[in-house]
Image (cartoon, rainbow, N blue to C red; front, top):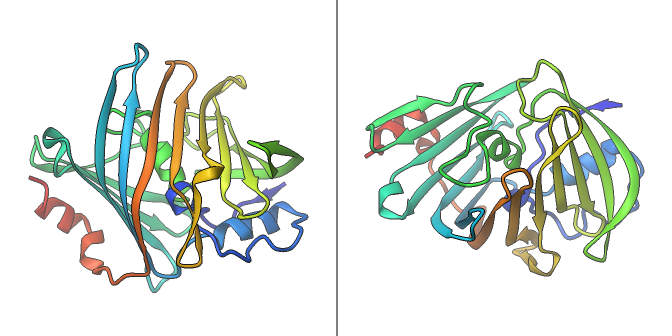
Length: 265
């Protein structure tokens, strides 16, 4: 087994160089390196739409902007700001990557006009009424709890050959999950499916990307249509990338808790 040394971006940050998967990959380390290469060099700014469907089929829609930036120290930061619906406008989440430990995570709650730190006890709860927990959101951006990984037998997802990597979380990680299984597209190194298993081996959530909507934008691969399904609650949330800009100029100031608090209204 190999300990994963660096965060691995997925989903809307499942963006990759067209040539990244040209060669046959043999080891977990090679697969992970290919996934880690699947991100812009500097920044990305994406307009997102969440559509959450409950057990009886009712759908609620939320939209916002996710901004990602790699800093000079080699660590990244992410801020997600909601602008629709009106009662959610101004709500935001900030992730600050830390070396060799979990990122700092803050959330803005305009109704309370204050910024709160997301604690370990909160990470498994729903993120603003979607099927993504705060822990799921961390993982989407490439931040993972302490885990080990091993390669499983290759498979096929939606007609596409994939590498399969199982990631086992440490018992003291504080995670709601026991293990994560990634199904990584051999052509683009974009994860086509991620299965999250709770203690006891029960499959709790499954995140999938639509291969037909993986597009090459400015030389990078972007997964534009994704669905998170909660198999226990029988709910799901789609996450669509409406627009994305790669390596545009983004101010460092927007990635601070001070800026988050200044705009929390």
